[in-house]
Amino acid sequence: MLSDLVIENVAVITMDSEQRTVRDATIVVESGVVIYVGPAADLPEGVSERLGQMPRLPGRGRIAIPGLVNAHTHAAMALFRGYADDLMLQEWLTTKIFPIEAGLTPDDVYWGTLLACAEMIKSGTTCFADMYFFMDEAARAVEESGIRASLSVGMGSMAENAGGSGGPGRPDGFGAALARGSDFCERWNGAAGGRITTMLGPHAPYTCSLPFLSATAGRAGELGVGVHIHISETFREADEMRSAYGISPVEYVESSGLLDLPVLAAHCVAVSDGDIDILARHGVRVAHNPGSNMKLASGAAPVQKMLSAGVAVGLGTDGAASNNNLDMVEEMRLAGLLHKATLLDPTAVPARVCLEMATRGGAACLGLDDDIGSIEIGKRADIVLLDFAAPHLSPAGIADLASHIVYSACGADVSAVLVDGRVLMEDRRLTTLDESAIMAEAEARALRLAGRVDGNRTQ
Ligand SMILES: [Zn+2]
Image (cartoon, rainbow, N blue to C red):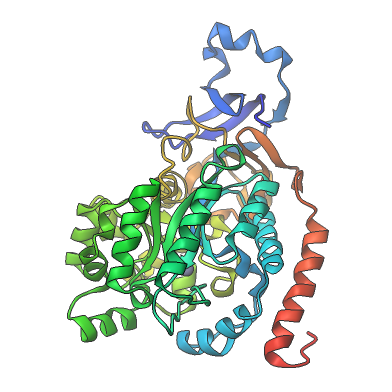
């Protein structure tokens, strides 16, 4: 399924190490890998000779960017979109999210993940990091959709096991949880032609004991996989950890030895300068979720400070129950605006940085920065084309293209999406997924799940 393809006369924001933007470029993809990006005039002879036989994707009037990486989500929660809004976090979890999750079947997770994949592809996301349950079904959805993903089974060791934003709702003990997570990694790591990678997913410091986190660290080392965990999502979590143990959630996780592994830490909202030093020292990658953090009134993660300290930061949407969409173009804009407003500084987290977090930063979060995150020779052809022929993106000639994408565009401006050079969408039509069938299934399943909780709810 790896493809050859040429895109001509396209404007490219490469996000390569030299931050090259080329206003009239040719991109050549061979066997799913970028073999040339730059002006047509500079095409090497060996490459230009082969172009004649290759299929074309129109580039004129379009902007190419690296596929967006959603560094933290719970894809199947797309089924709960709009089910529980404008509630306090604990009420949101205990009266709405946990009860509805309790009814989920493996098939629900499959259809919920397909719905999320359709939405993500349509808004320019080519890769996502997921943590949930029934992950074999999520992996099947990823395999079928053609998208790329880093998947983990949410695991917890504590009886109450109450996790925010898609926590593991089925505590089944220390050993069993770790076995479920590890077995999943063994089944799926490197599957779907390498599009699926895996991590272990201990849910959060407040749902995982220290011995459990230490055991997880040992197992991740044996499996050669990273770890995906929520850390310090709220100030309440940080306060409760300090009351119980006298340390911060970051220090708690550090004391387990887990941070010696490649760790993707979601949120990191309530972190001190000392915590940021720990994150930087251990090379922890942080998934920043501005939309979810705002909606649940969790606060604003100190992204500027983390970036200054050298922490790799990616952007995530979190689950659709707390966002409520999976549109990474919108998430970039939210990131840009949130920090300007909270720091009272219009220069904070500029557009380039937002785009960087959503591409290269996300790739680093998932340990995939050698393969994706920029459009450059040797990397996988995960490429998104935005159609700039729209009133809200005009005029484009005087604008910085990155600023235009972050501050003026939206996910619906994405017109074509490639993963491994394979066209997953062209002219906004999905090639791998039946959008209306997925929406109909999702509707029926959401009604059944909500009805279980709320009685005879029909709308
Ligand atoms: Zn989450």
